[in-house]
Image (cartoon, rainbow, N blue to C red; front, top):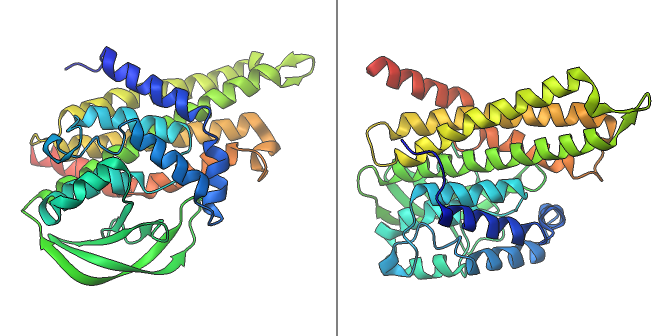
Length: 323
């Protein structure tokens, strides 16, 4: 199985990295968490112009009809740069659900002119950023409903605004397996975000270790710190092929197992990266003014998003037992 990205995918990743590196995403994320979505919506539209929103929309509906590995490439960069907004919901899940329920809306999704969010209890009981969404959906088994946003719920990640939702009108009964496949695709995209966030945390920790000095030496020269950073590098490098392998297995009988294994590995690696980055930075990493805390709380929130680690471990174990 091939785990290396091709030249086109690498170029796509670099283009997103180049744009997001100068887009001020951390500042936009802070404002987003405070209810000011203006800067985040500008990034949203620019990413739509770069093709991110069209990835999962079929070509005959104005999209790119891209492969799952292309989605992984994009969402790793979204996680790396802390981009706020319901990207998993609008870019990954909504096209799959609305293709069956409201295909005329797919072109708007691809263009980034419509923001969709959703809840899918019990694993995803709240709708992310429902206050900025044009459409809120509720998935109940194979039933798809329009929904109404209710109370705002507090998240450990200040940039994630979670809302209770109430079903209103039934849109459609989805074909068997569509909802489950869409939620697995969401889990895959979330795993990519975790990997991207973990990579950024490691990068920040390494850079800080090179510049912070104690006892007349850069702290990065101390052996214990080198070992801790190396452990993070190994964890991220082991998570990446599981993530790519899960993307390549979409549509196969092993897809659910592989997606869960990728979520577990990406969660564990990103969590280790967050703990190590905080240890390297020390007390400054706790301050609200330092961007490090934004990535740390993002990781903590994404670990529980689209299925907890225990849920995915149970799925992997069940698949192994069944085989």
